[in-house]
Image 1 (cartoon, helix red, strand yellow):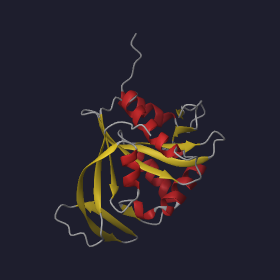
Image 2 (cartoon, helix red, strand yellow):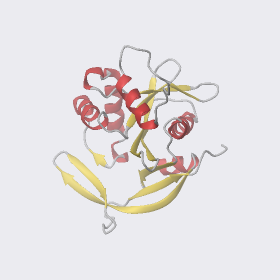
Image 3 (cartoon, rainbow, N blue to C red):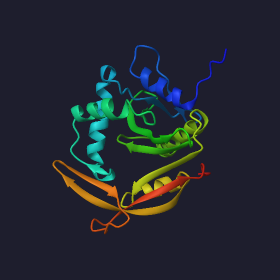
Length: 218
């Protein structure tokens, strides 16, 4: 009997089990272990109030790092998890905790194309105190897991050019591929930036696309 499952099935299993009564998967970060990554529950009946608080507070803290700018609330975060992350077969979020189980960051994968083996690192946010170098280890652990466990052969990330995270990603092994102008769209209670090669950069930044070339010796 073949009990092996592919990356798409594994992702669905992890998301479905997150927040449930059984022992939850955690991915160790570093050797020796410095932190743990655990899938964030996205089913409406399993949402973790502590995770909702962290996701909401940290998003508001780094408002200008996202392509959508709005005032987050725990209710809005809960709706986003249940309606947009949970049903998405190519998206997962992890809460990052230190060894005392104190949350200090969240990270994710998005835009996974299972046919081509492509995925993007997404929502790499440190909201609390963390040991020096820990976020580099977290991101490289996430990318290694995406390759070995999910079978993704090509990994990338997108970031606003006015975000200092560009240098962080380059340090982690990403290489800039291209920059695309962004068009600013104002809506009630929200500002969105969408890629538009014809847009004029009145707001002063672009979207930087970076491809992952593998970990660097730090």
